[in-house]
Length: 439
Image (cartoon, helix red, strand yellow):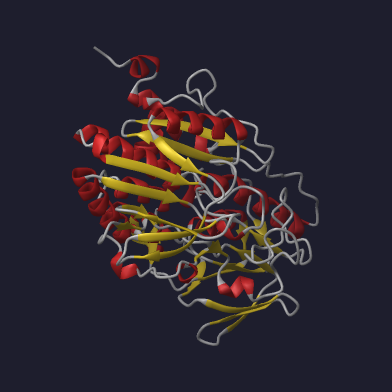
């Protein structure tokens, strides 16, 4: 007998709809007009999802531009796949490709890290001492996982002593699966949390909490397992209606929740976590945990004149851009896209898909001496896994309004097989299409 979700929408039909332009894929790549002649020098810092997508789109739009990408990383990592790797559903190499294979012809790749940004002189300096001048600068540096901010953490411990670190990379995600698999066999106390900083995919800590609970249930060991979630603030999720749904699911599944707990330290020998709370530091024991550190802008951005000069992110270093245009508010020939952008939402691949065309069009408008009407409304997407084979496709904007890409087909707050398929199968295909400039 067919599953009711499959009756509503077949696998083939779903994938076709996703590839046709919904959710992360958006409305698809528009038909391109004749290329615009220009001698503009455009430098892109970062060859991750945002930088690669921007480079691909600019190559297709401009004729004669000098486009340079600066990034030392040889590997391109499909970061949305880390959770699936850490759930034992995909191998580590599922998330790994090469940087070179995604970069379009006509782009110069400087295989070094950027060391200095001088927006007054319109130039950057690489780690090797090379100076590169620009007319336009695209910040697509991603973010920095500040592991040193968690006292006692050592990357070499991931996968041992009940320590996981899903965000650290594909190999560490695979090691995390090994630790979680052993824990759900043996039982004990699992403690999950997130940092108090802005972070990429804020739903990921919740997903892994759900997955650990689900594996224990599937193995029949849930009675021997305690699952705790320490929220960094007074809510589990920034969107109120989603927060309430997660709270209800946690209550239903016996996840014990504490609020206003911010991670400070881990003692791997004693298996103790230390959290800062309004009442002072507290310690809690654990048998399994997923360490997620504070997240900040990379040093090259934090040490430049480009971060916010005040406000809640002053210590995190995000680029001070207009949240609708992605243009820097003090240096108009500088744009930021992806994780490094200082906007209230948007540290996901889905946000990159919507931010890049906006920044692109404003840059093109500058070259053509016109004004661009393009705006970014804060769209972001989180396929919230709640168990293997079920997820909620949560999409929202700056105002915390739920934005449905599949109205009448996918209800955002229902645990559906279709939403799971979006995460497990369709998302990577649409991500790759985005990198190719096709979405």
